[in-house]
Length: 238
Ligand code: GLN
Picture 1: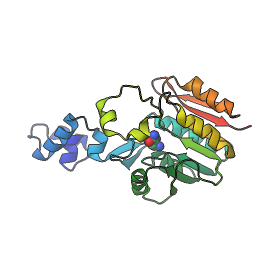
Picture 2: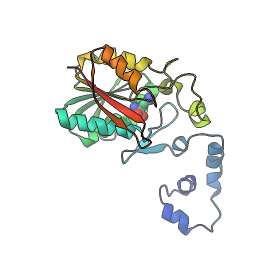
Picture 3: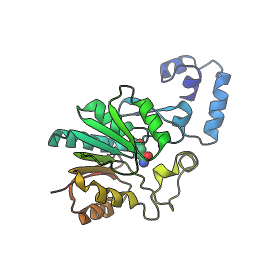
Picture 4: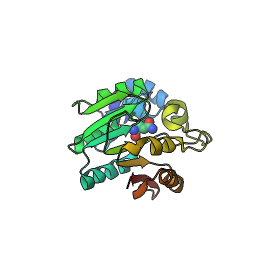
């Protein structure tokens, strides 16, 4: 991918295979050096694919993960099942969830993040201007039918690869000692909305369900990722 990128032929694997005997362009050297220092590929290329679309990424936003496509699929099903009209993406980062939902369904989507750097990238990604962006800490004071969030859910004690720990923004990853702080906040703050769908980390299913149950939420659905890890939960208020 780095060689194709350096040749100005991003994604053209056939070209690379057809030119396998040519020496690599020297333009690839600084890119390979960055990768050797564990910088994530997506930051070097400046883009990452998510749900079939390309998103700009850079230091300051979490790189979209394939697991998050499970959360998007769940949100799309909730939109279809319940005739959802207004969606909030809480902690939008690159905007990948908000922009995907707005592209896939005729819903009004708001994307919120506490980070100005993240919102700048989210706005760049919103080439069609379909999402309403707000710089805010928490849920804005207006009504939503569905709150979707992939919040930080990693314990500060967890050991991560250098790609993640040295390059991705800590504020997008970590949620204190027990890694559950953001679920507590969302369960309390989202009670003005009818439904919530959240991504969770491996093994957090029971703890997160209990946090939401304490605020009166009922579990509607859970979804596993391709590794069979329960990855997304949907709740509603009866
Ligand atoms: N919503 C963004 C994503 O899923 C950012 C999430 C985050 O920074 N925790 O990629």
